[in-house]
Length: 538
Image 1 (tube, helix red, strand yellow):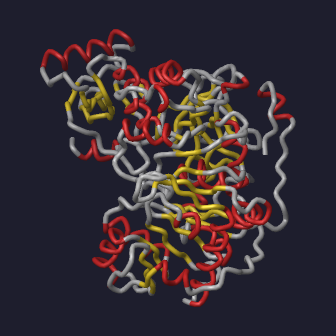
Image 2 (tube, rainbow, N blue to C red):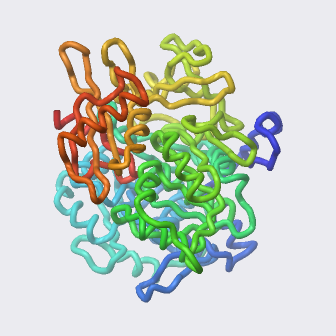
């Protein structure tokens, strides 16, 4: 844990990792609170009557114990992979705790995945049991014949063909269970990468991954926990951002987490949820923050009581940073990481680590640098690849069944990220873009983030995404896909005005030479723009 400090230097100087010799996520995120403060709320949500309901830590422990006993009776053993295909809800942490108690490996998967995405991951991981709602089970039914290892399905929404009932299993099982004796390096979960540079890979993480996240979560949320802290994110809990930036760290600190519906992000609904539940700490990805700009802030007795907002997953940008500070009355703390090694860079405005257009600085306990291809560290303002030095408690163990890919991930002891960045003279890291998103035009290497940020300043632009389009003369030209604000319509005059707007504010080589107006932009379940799908349209 981080201890509150007045400046970044003392924060880093006074930090040391304290990883116990024996560690199980369920023991620290569930059992210890259930035994010391049993009525403390763990998960909050709205029931069918629109009333706030709560799952206490004691209830979570009993349900997790029941599920662990039931799964054990079904033959689930240590290191077996079990898929969780569910939206945010009380069942998700119960399932996670049960699997950690068994020593099994949790495989969270997004409910919005299509059948092909599910089939690839379920087959690659060798999943033996999957727990899902009726929507997920219907998708699995289409592919189950091609998943020989998948022997058992559980339904969380009542009877379903070929599936056992989740609630019935819990009702018939004992509520006491002896948690597996695990070490911090024993595998606990597997999260698949987004597959931006090839087929998705299963990043296998150890129990220590939760401990590795704590300093970054505390830095981004101004030394959480404080009295009254309550966390929420629109990000799917199947994503590393939702699971490891919010859900499990909050439970570790004994703080309640608000569960919302995993539908398409709606700014009015998001504001309403944060007001209704008195959310104090939120993780809101940059694209979602940009969408919040289009809706009015709640007022009166329904106003927000936010204390902190953390944002990560893609570049926040100076424009959204400035708007957020004005709208919420405090600076959004940007942070950075990836599935394999998450939350290693962060901002913390409380101690002065906050700079528009920059991610932040290395979180205490993590050694992060921008390196050259030979592994040497770049000079200030010299572009290179963001990398993290091993060993590190938050770093993955390996890619599942891909030892060669695991080896290629490293240059010496530096774990490479595939993300381009630079470090300024003050030690702040600026994110340029992923290797495959960086645009090469007339000899210049251009990150899409700066152009997208500039486009958002135009009064007609609601959302924007930029890619490189192949060009015989310039190698690539900048092409922008733009979603317009209400009240604006597509025209050649507007297209020219937007191009000129960027050219005047950035440079002649960065303005979009082509603009396509679109009704919506393709996004991942985590709120990232999928530029790969835009490139496929060229």
